[in-house]
Image 1 (cartoon, rainbow, N blue to C red):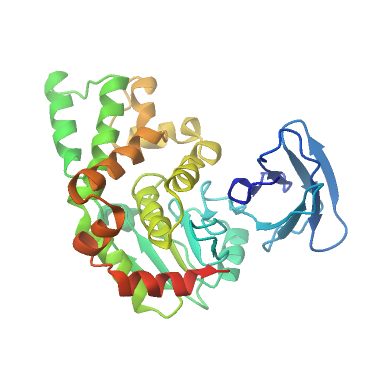
Image 2 (spheres, rainbow, N blue to C red):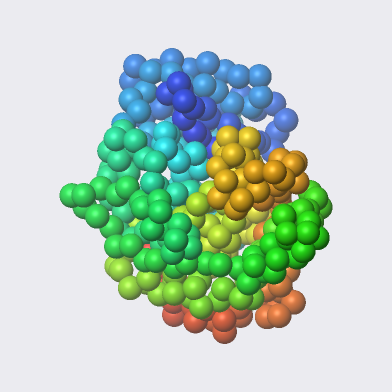
Length: 334
């Protein structure tokens, strides 16, 4: 049987769409039916298919049917943006009570400063109402977002600077006698610590994110930072958990960044950004990777300090029962 939360669709640089799925049966017979005509479907060795011939300027929905007649309707999770590699719809997931997060309302991405003209057309078609930008103010100023002019969404500047940032780099400079000096494990531990800080030190910023979302009726919104994985990853996790998506599914969505975001392509940019050109790339790599340990540390902090996500949302972020019900009314469907 097909597992609805484990169907992922994305478009590659050649314009081909890839449909991947998981199933409870080891070898299901799955048919991919696109709602339209004129396409070529190729089955792939792994559980999935490659679909050619679809227009690239709009979103597409696919219907998957197994041999038992079970059907799943799914859309692109990673949208085919040329200028930002990790632009995703994080809808489509099932909640613990059997509802489903709507497609086409919740998006996450990296920075939007390098979007192509074709990207701009696709972005405009999403009809976003709100963009929450977690980048530092200097990042926002030096790499301003490209957004549609005829229907510009509200921009909420929500800069996040983890409190451990300056401490880590100060200690690394001290170790290197004035130059940054650290190893891979130190960077990995630093990233774990950053995620703890998201939960503990950035509560007001994430609380404001929810206030911004709730202030607009049925808002279609995008949360993003520079890479779309850490600050954004925690934001998306909070939204999905608040909607009732199981924690293991939320972690699966978080880890999709490893499929769509290439550390090698971003390494040079990151080293320039933080003045780390002389630092070994392998030592820097954890800053560009995504690991379950990162988000797990943030969630462990919530559990340790509040006992549950629901209590954390209410006491730390001001998202109580009434706000949760409103969010679920907006973004869930039967």
